[in-house]
Image 1: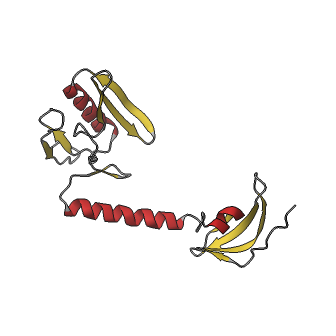
Image 2: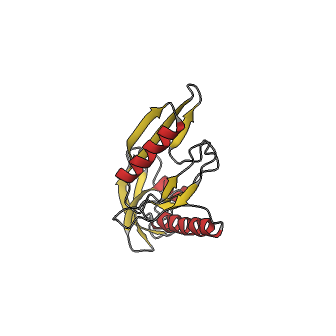
Image 3: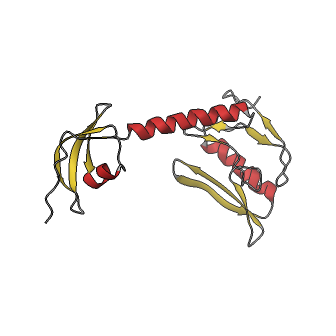
Length: 176
């Protein structure tokens, strides 16, 4: 059996090793570390030595926050439409064939599918013969499940790849 390397006092990214913390399920040594932010966490020695774990999670949160801010600024600078649903900002993706978020075409059967996921649960997953029906179902589901200010797009012209969109304001009493 190989003798474990004492890593007490060593620094890996934002983590400083305090003491040994037992064994992982796979037999690797676990180390109790203190992050620069003050949190204490237990990390697998392999992840420490290989640079997989660099912090208690604060680094990932900071980088994610910076990416989101940068992305929002780019969208605003390019005058691209986005909406906020209390979790993330949505933009029509470049590979979107329909021009409507959550509506896609099933190529094998030439049907239209409308989907909406809220908090990790699929609340709308229906198939329609007509594109307009799928769009209307998606918009109705957005109004029902998303916060009042989250849905701000109303589709006037219902043809695939070419939609006319108008931003509307919902003050809680109805659309203006």
